[in-house]
Image 1 (cartoon, rainbow, N blue to C red):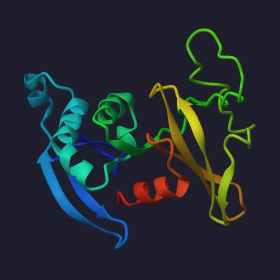
Image 2 (cartoon, one colour):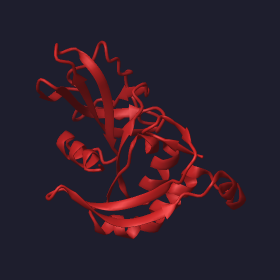
Image 3 (cartoon, rainbow, N blue to C red):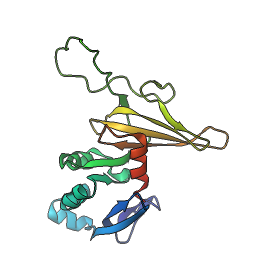
Length: 204
């Protein structure tokens, strides 16, 4: 039995973990590797969790990932610390998606030039992100049309225990009100919103 994202339930059947190399210029992809996912009994026998199995798949493809741009796009199932931490430790840039209720905090503002260093460990986070009362300076709108509103900025993600480049996309109804919000992120904080969205959507 495996989780089916399409059905939104656990289903009986087969599940395959696969990798493809995306060609963003031609908007296509080429198959790279696929492995049948072990059953729960097989994982117990091997002393592994399902997420550890997925991480080992990435480890086996790390050389290819590095060769083909060193960026891995994975869906929201993998936007958790047990996947993000070991994958980034391999030196791989990860683009994925967070749960809509993820606890987010603004990154601390940069120190003013000439300011005296503070004692103790540097702060990792500032105030909590409140979607009803946003700091427009730290999560500014970078693109907007009739269908969506895109914000981008640096945030500290509590569940990941790290700062990421967040791209928050509000998909709008015809009357301009919020339909749904998606929280895409990239572990390479120097990337632009366009760069992140292009690679996440290229996952399909």
